Length: 602
Image (cartoon, rainbow, N blue to C red; front, side):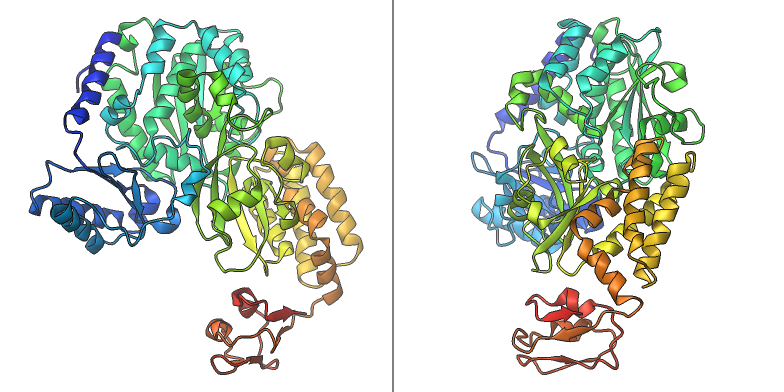
């Protein structure tokens, strides 16, 4: 790999890479999604089948086969995207090895593809891809693909054309807010670090994505690692840092692997390390592994973990920008925040502000999981309503029932009811509903989900993940969990609801870090919007719920019959069913399965 000794070398290489495909403009491209979700679904076999078929048909030199990242369609993996010259991309889902070979046969015979398994492109119509701009469109293990698309040009500008303050001013003017959860203005954070005392400073990328159901950062690192490396180097130039760290959980082996490959490639080409592009600017990056502690997503806990200490938060101020890693000024941003930096510098602050809302400019990547049809990633303009995201992009619930609620912000977020789905998604609007933006994880719940059990589940997670340093989080969350446990066992009392609210608010006001301060959100938000379910638990006591089938609504689809573990549902197909109450184990499987609202819970 040739080392780029000067900026001219970078420009000449980029020009030659761009001209190479132009010479063979008629060359079709086949992108196979080879990120974690795709590989787990068999994408490796699909890729091998297509590669073998291209060789057999003599098309290996005439068709470009690309190992790409994830385009966000996790529900349809393995995915294959087909790009014919001067035609829109066709996205195929649930592709098998056999179907991959058929695609090559069609291409050889007709010069085109049929697409009976194509994914509805309406999923992409309302999306605006900035952080995910290259995911699924380049080979993440080939730096040449990134350079062909303008990669490292903004680093060159930051080194040769702009003053550090110019970079910071652009980021401040863009209004970019941290995508890791708190929404703090990125440019303000960089400005504080630039002005901090001391010659040694650090850049840290927080890739410790610990929310259940969240996989935004993982997809960026697996699909476009160089965009994060370039942004970190630009940030280093802006604040005066010479060293950076990517703190990534060890449970992301593919992301770590591709990030390591990207770092080595960038070093070999003189884009990281000493004398970058022949200048006097030096900046290098190394990977630090996290052991899966949720609290290490909090920046001061993360810093302590990098230092080899126990991952516990510290009181702020001083903030990391003043005193962070090894007592030096440290700037911590998450993966998605860094993924927005290069496009902002390339297209300008005004362009970024033209997307989203005044208080929350730009886009946000959300991961949709739970009872949702189109499980996967969506990058949308800030301000889109919850309704649009869940139904126009998410496709509605996976079981055909109305969506009852959605939890945003992971275990520290709140549950938002369907009556509030017309709310535009911004940092302040979600906070007003008792939730948070968080890093972008969204857990969707359809009708039939017990919101009391949901609050209990997430509080259990928080109790398990608390570092135990401060009393409000360590003891307070445990007491909240015990009260919920008592209510679910039918041993609750009416005054328990008041205790939950009072204790939850005390924890929010007194916990040391963001984990503890937001831990009561699932409880407080479900109490606010679904209080009737808590009261129902109190009235029912320890009597389990009874399920009855309405003979008028029942169409005899037999779905409940098939899922009943006690075999206590009777009835022929297309005739109303009944439940033998003496044999019912009260599991609720029938209630959750019925798509016709024919089963009542009493």
